[in-house]
Length: 227
Image 1: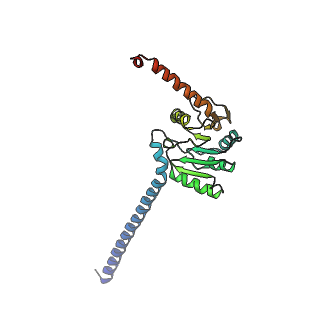
Image 2: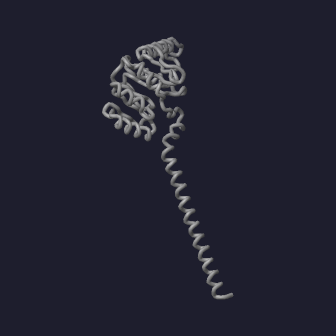
Image 3: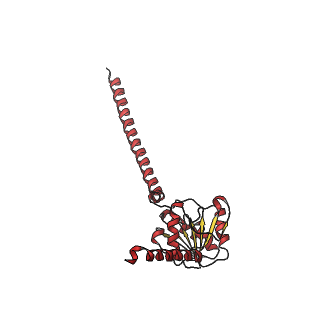
């Protein structure tokens, strides 16, 4: 073999080694990018998915324009404090603030709460709105005279009891998408998925008191209570 052939062989070997190293570096870069993307995706989606793992959850489904209009329509003669339970991206709270309410939202998803605060600031209603990262079952709604809820059927019966115990008798409750199972609405607005149901707190609080009185009478008349 000549010196020229030896030189060509060594050059080709060097190029192969260089190509192999380049491929390895490219593989590491791609792996890093994919891994980083997965971590970022998890960081963004985890707060959305985690609530769904709870026994009773409020999935984020943005309110339609018609739903927002219907909520404002049934509350047009009202004022004061308003709370949106499961406030999502804040559109109900912000719309209510623009119509004169001192509006608050409670939401488990921190990303949605931060976005809602930014959106309220951008639209100039940050002074009359507030957004809280909180579980609705750990919050008292006693200070609110207007309540909006985008609930799910699994939670509505339990929420009836909570609101009946906590709300002032002059409060109004607006349910969107799903009505409460035992309360009788004063009236409704909209149709289909945009329907909203309006409930009077004085009515359902009175009903709860009557049920509690009946339950107490039954317990007093039971054989166990007379022994």
